[in-house]
Each structure stands twice: as C-alpha cells, then as structure tokens.
Length: 213
Ligand code: AP5
Ligand code: MG
Image 1 (tube, rainbow, N blue to C red):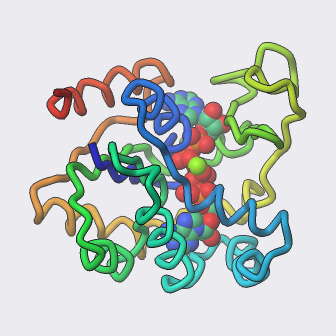
Image 2 (cartoon, rainbow, N blue to C red):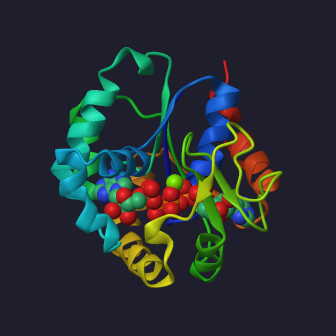
C-alpha cells in the first residue's frame, strides 16, 4: 500500500501513521520530522528550512520534493510506504505524480480548527525516537519520559499558539485544496479524526482494510 496521510497540523498524522506502519509493516516518513532533524544537525537543508518552519510557513516546494524523491528511490519503499505531511501543495502533488509513483489512497484526518490549538499545547515529543504524546489524551507512563526508549520529552518550537494559527491558515490556503486534487483521481478517503486516538485508529484501519491482500 502506497499511502498519503493528510490533515491539519495536529490532526494526528504522526500518531496514526505509526499505527498504520506497525500494522502493515511499511515505513512511514514525515517530511516535518526529516526537516526538524536537519535543523537540529545544522545541515544546509536545516538552515534553509528553519525560518519557514519557525514562522509556520511551508518550506519551498523544491526543497521537500528533493527529499522525497531521494527517499522514494531508496529500497526501503519497495513494499509500500506512508507519506506523512507530503505533498502539501499542488506543485508537490504534481511532482509526486511526475515521479511515476502509484498512490493507492490519500487519507485525510478531519479535525475542526477549535480542537487543534488544545492538541498542540499538550503535545510532547521524544527527543530521541520522535514518538508523539499528549499530556491529557495520550500521556506517557512516566511524565516527560518516552515509553519506547526512555529518553526525555520536549515541546516543539512551532507548537506555540501564535505559530499554530499561522500553520492552520497555511493549511487551509495551500494544503487543503489537495483534497479536491485527490478526490478527482478517486483516491481520497476522509476519516473523522476528532474522536480519541483508539477510535480514530479503528476508523482509519476500517477505511484501509480494502487494501489488505
Ligand atoms: P509537520 O511536522 O508535518 O507538522 P504538521 O503538519 O503541522 O503536523 P504535526 O506534526 O504538528 O501534527 P500531526 O498531524 O502529526 O499530529 P500528531 O499525531 O503529532 O511539519 C512541520 C513544518 O515542517 C511545517 O509547518 C512546514 O514548515 C515544514 N514542512 C513539513 N512538510 C512540508 C512539506 N511537504 N512542504 C513544505 N513544508 C513542509 O498529534 C498532535 C497531538 O495531538 C499529539 O499530542 C497527539 O498525542 C494528540 N492526538 C493525536 N490524535 C489525537 C486524538 N484522536 N485525540 C486526542 N489527541 C490526539
Ligand atoms: Mg506530525
């Protein structure tokens, strides 16, 4: 299964992609995670991306298209993949088409804007493995410690309320039109992402069950 996972910032893309990756045994790649790693390492890519990310804007298309092209041509993706957060603009979707990769489904997690700020303010991320938690909705077993690898949790710089509002307006203006793009191809699946994590996972798995062998 070659899957695109879409949705507003904080809709639960990272949370659900980890569950799909585990169940289907396919890799999930988040362009946001890759860019944050590059910022942390201080690479040329990270330097190019940082100011856009801090402002809640999209990193230029050619930068992320290059990353995904390299990733999809690697042998990790031969049994399928999940793209979390790519494409995020019509030019990115057209570039993906031009790579000749067949996409089975574009799954959009639907969450109202009012819920998003609350989700972001409570989010905590593992500094080592990137696992995502929420202090109320998906708390770690021990406060500020990752369940998976016991590393410390941190709050993402772009989860400040003002930046979240910028990310939301960028989503509505530039990314949300992709729903029409994939609906026109007959591969859009919209899933309610407003229920708790387990209920949302159940809806996601049901929607994807038609791709099981
Ligand atoms: P990216 O890292 O992709 O951020 P995003 O799209 O804003 O999405 P998030 O990662 O914030 O949220 P999520 O949907 O993964 O939610 P999560 O599962 O963590 O991108 C960051 C930046 O990088 C962009 O702003 C841009 O600058 C740049 N970038 C990345 N890709 C790009 C591209 N293709 N082109 C250009 N620029 C790009 O969940 C959120 C919280 O809610 C967590 O705390 C979680 O525990 C909780 N939660 C999840 N599900 C539920 C639920 N059902 N109920 C209650 N709580 C829940
Ligand atoms: Mg994410």
